[in-house]
Image 1 (cartoon, rainbow, N blue to C red):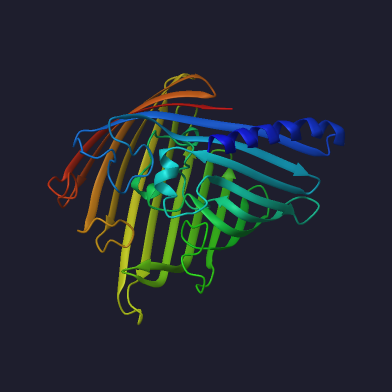
Image 2: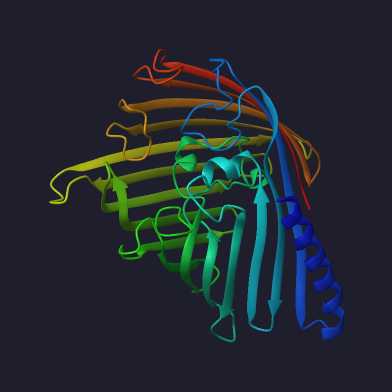
Length: 352
């Protein structure tokens, strides 16, 4: 992996110099991100891994790198592309089933009209589902909600997007499935997704994303239906909130007579004391009684609360500390002996 980062860095620098010889027709931007952390789970698991349904900051009592990422954004006339590589504990956990795990994104896009309101993209892309990214700088909280950890962070396929005006945009996607680089089975039809975004003004965003495709349940591939809806609201210079709701349903038999459902409401509120200090509270609930998404062996029904305090010396650097408490209706924690779980995570991240 070190050799891959070195090779990509040299290639990016070489392209940057070559850019000057094309009279600025070819534009290249280099960016990156590194997110380090220490997390402690008070259940003190004997293994290095924390809860199995968590993919970020998932190592116990360990100083580690959640994600280190290097990206090249390239554009030429009406065509653009992004290529980024990554490594870290998030990658090892979330891409465990993938052969190509060290590519965070690799896609090409083209503007289909002169006013650049319609685009077609293809490749490995960030997920269109949800409001929490793997890049912590984009999130109000330090760790991710159960909702985010158990819905796609990436997709592979094609995406057609159209911007009607400053307020409305819509997208349609054909992908290899629910957070997959390669299809689980070659004879499966592509999955279908939609995204509708409404921005009435700069302080409000309403997003509705859907997914339909064949996914595994009890060693069978049956249809999964999924909806993610959220409202992102900036109230003023101090207050910022996100209200989200996921609902999913999956056929669990060939005859489609039985279904497994799951859902999760989330409310996050952030308060900024000033430009350097922020805090946020998240309350969430996740129910997946038939283990369609979370393989807990027993019905998964959990309430979560978290509070984080952030210090921002500048706009590119963050130190965040978060306490998080889960309460379940069944003994799903500490090898199925406890209903409650408490953990503390401290992160230090830098983006450039």
